[in-house]
Length: 481
Ligand code: ADP
Ligand code: MG
Image 1 (tube, rainbow, N blue to C red):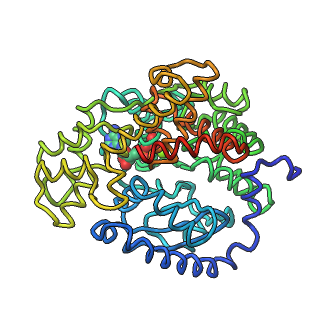
Image 2: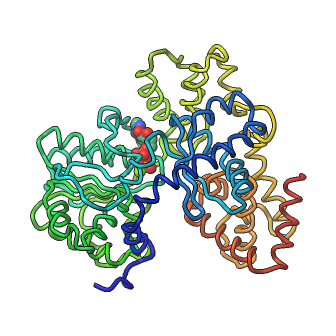
Image 3: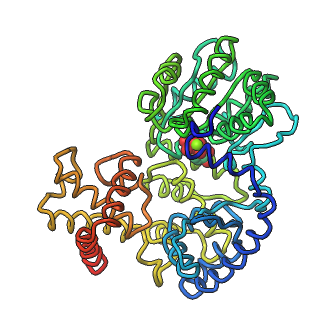
């Protein structure tokens, strides 16, 4: 098999076989030192309480190309940094490194272990029941018991339960799709726990892990292992299959794994961020296989279900959070259960920091306006952030003579679509909103559409001087408005 048939990702995986281990310790030290210097600069920019809660115990882990990896000590710290300080951290790091930087944040774990997890070699001879996704790795909390069933996920829950109890009899494959943070990985892991408890063998992998394993097998290091590993479990669970499409060789290999498992009456469950037919670049024969069984969608839970989720999660805490406060958290509009949990975590952190007694007012303050009221952070508070989106639309609309309604609407007319993309770009560049949040604001558009628009404008910005001036002008109007 010729190497040029591999996608960029597959080739990168192959390249990783090289000297990665040797260079690891050196890189780790460098990342450590650079991050210490960055922390010094951040200390004067970030409010002390926030610095102590989120940054004090962070470490520089790895630095390769543009990617800088740090670790923090809690999911709360990661959430806060990602949501509220990501652009500040990247900017500060870029200044210190004198280059563009993309920051990635992980919770805990030593760098060597993380790197080793990524290395697609020498699997131990443990049974196939394992996970390949770092975040998801064998999370004991992700069970059917801890999953709250609501109108938004009923179908997916029942199907997952049925498949865990009697694999390959009802729906094969089971295909679960939704936007991010709505419980797909949770359900997948619940199937895995439940089936394993009943003595079934399971294999849980992210699609990246599948690609890594496949590439390792092509290198001739473990082709038998690969076959054994992927063709023997009673249930194969593949998380986020959308990342497989376009990686042609791996996709082909998955197609054969799929056929082999299906023929031998073994269950396949996959999750994805879109329905099978929207898997861009996927081969049509794989798409049609994925449509053979049952396809279910999970959507955003209602306020009532959000409350039930908060109630369940908070019942495990060593202290009580009143129902009023839980209702308050449930009432805040969010675009994922992960974000809902993020808000609960903020309240938990408030209790842990013992800064203030837990009252409705202290929670309203925290959730509406963030934990900070000073410096750069105040510009990121919830209300102000939302206003920034309105403002950006207004400014772009006025400049190009397109109404806000048209930009939020479905018009595909060239000028309107372009103005909409410029608004996406401006919002993205001037705030820490995720593409999914911008999409929600801009007429419920998919995060991928937003990312596409941002990339497109970014491209013109970098290559067309005239356009760059135009955008710089709009940026300065927005910042000074
Ligand atoms: P996805 O894989 O769709 O991106 P996850 O499965 O990672 O989402 O879910 C994000 C978080 O939300 C997890 O902590 C998960 O436990 C939680 N979650 C999502 N839906 C539910 C639910 N119905 N009940 C309890 N927790 C949920
Ligand atoms: Mg997931």
